[in-house]
Length: 308
Image (cartoon, rainbow, N blue to C red; front, side):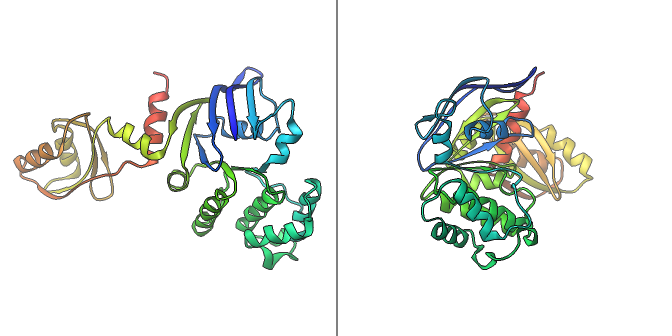
């Protein structure tokens, strides 16, 4: 559905995207991850025809974004990070406005269907200015869906909304994937892990990692095991010093009640921890393996990608 080849974007002397290549299959949920300035929004704006690339080619639903821009726009629904709203319009009037721009067949019926899908049908006569941040996000999703596009592109759809609304957005994305291909960017890494079929991690305009969350987790797991321990019997500084001296320990991170330990590759650090704690005369209250999250992967990759 989306094919990006050697995509580069420059703003003057600033290189926003550096020769990136990726594909998105039909019905797939792809997450774009990366710190601020990584190139996520630039990528999405190019895919929607909002800005042109400097170099490279992009095809969306089989259409070239430069030579067949209008056809691309017909196939794509875009929800930007900041929803363009008209505060004095009604909710229904706003979505109908977009339906008319998109030349949506049976616009009245389609507007009603979309408002029900995003759970705004009960507010159809309300002014947009009266909506909460979460409801405005739903309204932005409604305008992206009203022409029933094959591809939905969502730029930071959970920015500024409460945890319950984040859950609702997550459920909406899952629901969208039944009928659409979905590409979205997010800073909420746990959300991407739960929602995405595949993720692409961008940093400084380049793709630094790509794959299924579980595949990336297994790849990082190869760099060493992760164990959480709680130890008593001495001051925290003494315990941390002791843990750092254990054979095979690569990193020690102090947490609220205990320590997260990362072992070196191909070393089982658990017996070494047990032996050293006993020899020191301390008490091992807890020791358990720690599952690697997408956040661990993200931070590890971004850290490795930093110049020396």
